[in-house]
Amino acid sequence: LEEMIRKLNINEMLTGLAPQGKNAKDMAGHAFWKTQPVPSFDEMAGGEKIADGPIKEIDIEKVDKNPSPMYPGFEWVTMDLEDEKQLEEVYELLTNHYVEDKDATFRFRYSPSFLNWALKAPGWKKEWHVGVRATASGKLVAFISGIPIQLRIRENTLNCSEVNFLCVHKKLRSKRLAPVLIKEITRRCYVEGIFQAVYTVGNLLPTPFSTCRYFHRAIDWEKLYDVGFSPLPAGSTKQRQVVRYKLPDTTSTPGLREMQAQDVDATLDLLKRYLERMDMAQVFSKTEFEHWMSPKEKPEEQVVWSYVIEDPDAPDKITDFFSFYNLESTVIGHKKHSTVKAAYLFYYATEVAFEKDDAKLKQRLNMLVKDALILSKKAGFDVFNALTLLDNPLFLDDQKFGAGDGSLHYYMYNYRAALIPGGIDAANRA
Ligand code: MYA
Image 1 (tube, rainbow, N blue to C red):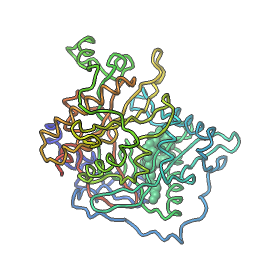
Image 2: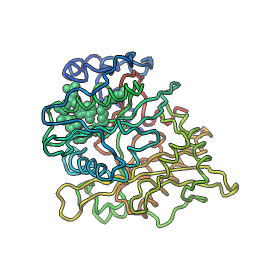
Image 3: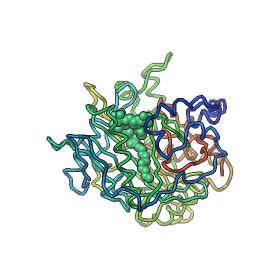
Image 4: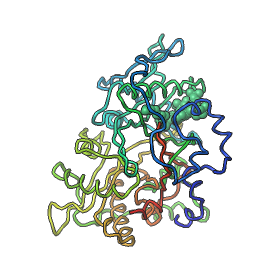
């Protein structure tokens, strides 16, 4: 992996873009995005030299008080996600129409408890859960959402919204409804005095300031093979693959246990210090940390798993922390398996990161992530996913993660941000 990353031109690696004006006409082809306060491809070819800052001033007095007109036959609706029925409607829409892989084999299946977690984060606003209904049937046919977050990009901390779950019913695609939804969530953010947003998209749009690659680690290789997720490598056998991904029954890090309420202060302190090493990170309040790392659902609806390492020599001292969350995917049209259960590596932190000893950090992370894999297996996951962010490149190869074919591009709305190196570079940043 290190080899592969070094060979790539840094700009191309980060954004998938070829600089020197080659993308200029692509920008002109974006009828909607070329009208929006986002940097052009050409501007971003400036790479890491760009000065961070807002693109335009917004005069809150001039922001429309009402939504723009909706297409005839459809109407705006503010979804009330405290109402289980409406939460279920969003779940249904996403389950049938949200993101698929490029071969349409898998589609994300965010559970209602996941949506509760992701859309009702501390400070959430009902007005930022925007739907479109067909007037005659009342059916929910489109959705977009935002939640308020504090985001630090290098030395600047912004109050912004994180926009997610943009979805248009398959029958209404390519009718320019997405730009209407994006303009409406923008208006609703402006109304609240929020003038910047962050969002991630698999597709390339104008213009990412960072890009990560997805990596996958098989837990139940045979199932992943059955559903067409994992190929059988040439020269290998099924049996050999199963052996390759076998994991021990028990974890090995001394002092590892589930995170509990009394660990929150120490763990948040550790995570904050760890994230300071990064160019960009969400700034968590205690309430947010509690929400994201320890939601309180029934066990069968569990979304996030969080663990800490309590120093065996100094009880109450938390030296490490890791978490992962549950996001299933529907296996489209498969006879035997209806879903793949994926664990996504979420936040983690370790005191070892402050010792500035890469070899030691690599060793520690490998131990922690191996335990995370073991715990995810116990919890019934089929695959464990991670992106090339934080210090992840230090363990991906050793823990038998393989590169997926998906990338995740990071975007800001109404903010210009110099490119943020991902992968190996980020790991060496501290
Ligand atoms: S990413 C997940 C997006 N959802 C899916 O992929 C689910 C499956 N697909 C669909 O539901 C539809 O295909 C969607 C597009 C709804 C994606 N982000 O209506 P159209 C541009 C931004 O004819 P449709 C997530 O949720 C496209 O380039 N723009 O297309 C984060 C073209 O513009 P241009 C997108 O296929 C969302 C125009 O829309 C995306 O029927 C962040 C075509 O419109 C996309 N994912 O519908 C949103 N896909 O001509 C931005 C297409 O210029 C938030 N387009 O190229 C910005 C911040 C707003 C708040 C600001 C506050 C200050």
